[in-house]
Length: 439
Image (tube, rainbow, N blue to C red):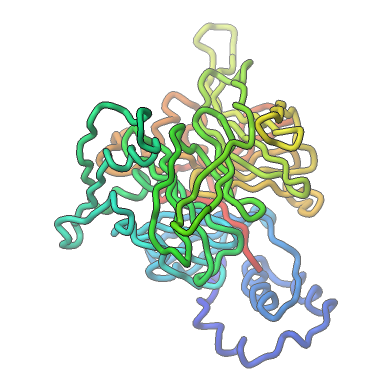
């Protein structure tokens, strides 16, 4: 395992003393191409800050380290793992709950949310969850202070008030702060290339059975505001300057911030996604929204389970993970059309519960496998709600791919998901997450 790269504070002094903008483009490309994979990130960040364009990186994976002070970075392109120092407080002992534009979003044991750049060590705190009026803290003594959730009011806003609000009264939900990550924080989606002073963030809240409540915060309105979404949000991305989401009913929505009150509202930009039939093993397990490179077409990647016969006897079968892709044609809109894509050609898709899903051209990154889905964990549950025998990944119960929480699936072959040998197949906490280094 490689030596941990220096933190930003270690490298800032010598970098500031050199004017890298005077280097020629050919020299920058030559230097960058000769570096080892971890050094390539650190030096690429310096060159990028000096105004040079360097080759974009394929997605990397951030995983928990061997100690709380470290994390591990895995390069799919290089097929290597390196240790990295985990900046405190943004990444030390934290769980990644989102990624976008070279940054990750983490949640710590005190329910605080941070933005962090795993390459440079730069970090910034996102608004406290208590800026949302439906969350407040009681028994503030650390380490057992509690976060209280006013479920009735939260659900009322989600359904937009009126007759759609469920009639049953919901009790006050109280959690220890550490339970917020993985139990309430489903995913945070950041605007493209977020910066501490200029960002927009979409937080998906999963409170009890009322899942997928969207909330938004921006740098000029640093408070979480729950937005109406009667169908709930299953996944979301930031694409072409806007947030897009897919509801649990299978409709893609576009989100806009209208007026001066800071509230985001949505409109449908697709018809309902048709159910997938044939070999999917029943109900879908998780859907991910993705934008194709270049064309920007919206795609939905559905993860499900299929039963594969392995012998002549009735019991000779395995339950395996599989993926299918559906593409929105005809320019989108409610009059658009969904089609099932047997192949995504010269492209690879990266999905995961803690990651902003991305699609990458394998022509630009020939080191990646084309027509494949690279996947990371989609279960974040941890704590007293978890059964002792399911190691936090209870939706894989009865599945032979249970511990393969990081792997690659070939759409062309339609076979079994393969693990990444450098990482092994064991489940870990916090779960791993994809991020694309911004250099």
